[in-house]
Image (tube, rainbow, N blue to C red; front, side, top):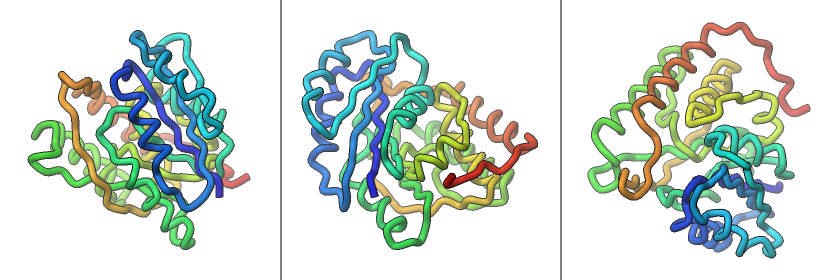
Length: 236
C-alpha cells in the first residue's frame, strides 16, 4: 500500500522545513510519498520548501494565490499516487510519529477510514471556547447522522484516495473537515478512531481557525444532512 501524506502550507516559513524533516523521519510500515501544496504563501514558505525539491519522496506544488486548506488538499489529492491519503498540517500541532498508528486498522482489515482522535488538556488546548466549539460541532454531527465520533475537526483523517475524490469535497477552507465527515456519515461510513497526541498553538504562534469556521461547519453539516445525494461509486 502506498500512502500519500498531503501537506497544505500557508505562511509557515518558520515551521515548513521542520514539518518535512519530521515526516521524513517517521518509520512507516510501507511506502509513502509526501505531496506538499504551498497555498499562495506571502512569506518565504515556498523558498523554504524548494530546499527539499531534490528529495524523491517529496513533491512540491504551488497555488498562485491563497485558496484555502480544502482547496490545497484537493490539489494534493489529485496529484497524489497513493492508495490511501492522510493530511498533515504544517503547523506543529500534531506529532508525525502518530501517523503509522492510523494505518494499523487498515492493514488489519478492520477499517478503510481512520480518524486520529485528540484529547484536550490544560497543557494542550488553545482555549476553553476552542475545545467547546470542537465538541459542539462533533455533537451536532453525531445528532444529525446518528453516529458517535469523538473528534470531527481532527486533521488526521486517513481514507482511500479514490473515496476522497468520489466524495467531491468542494469547501475551500476549514469547512472541508465538516463536509468530508458529513458525507462519510451520510453514506454509513463510521470512521475507526485511534488516540493521537496534540498541542495547540496560540494566535501569536500562527493559529488560523476562528469562530466563523465553526459556524460554517455547522451550516455544512446541516446542508449535507438534508441534501439529496447519490452514493458515490466508492473504489471504482
